[in-house]
Length: 273
Image (cartoon, rainbow, N blue to C red; front, side, top):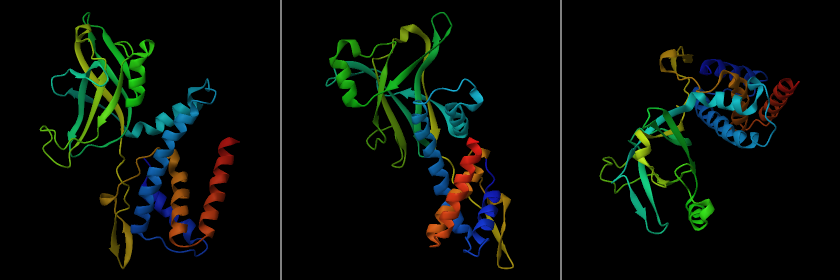
């Protein structure tokens, strides 16, 4: 976690260094929320591009491992429940599939799906798991037309069918969030003594908030109403730079983003030295 008060005080100190304007707590909270989401979205982009780079033999300095460590704050696992009869037949795709349902709750916090697996114990009591690969509907249709590409029980695939189901009788609230996935082909439950489908996902982070009370017409930090950033501690300087840049645009102070860029470049040079 990154302490929200530490970030706010650094932002104020740098913004006021040359009398470039005061950033109110309300403005800071808006900038803080946007900066946090920009950093998190950048993680997923960097993970995709990191696979193209040579892997570092030292796990401590491997780009992918560092990014995964940063995302651990948001990582969660949940279990899906069979929907309907548990097995349905897709006439257009011509193959039986299983449908599973996640997040029958208005408080669903899904932001991005990580992976989905069949998990359980086989008939001998040994732990067993098979990862299910995500595809889109056109790709699945193509796979089913090519015999060598057809999904199998050892190499199943899934696609997301719905993100909300207003006509689903099991959904009691119009604001409820439901994720339905179709898994092809239907799992051989006879291979498992117990069978579950588990989703690893990244939840939406809680919005940071610099809480305060007004004393002598000045806002003072209130620990009880504040919420820290849900980011790795090493992101503190990155947060300060991003918030300063956003504040410079809002305050129409072009020098502030320029100063921020210089600070960011200095940080990068130190990291690469």
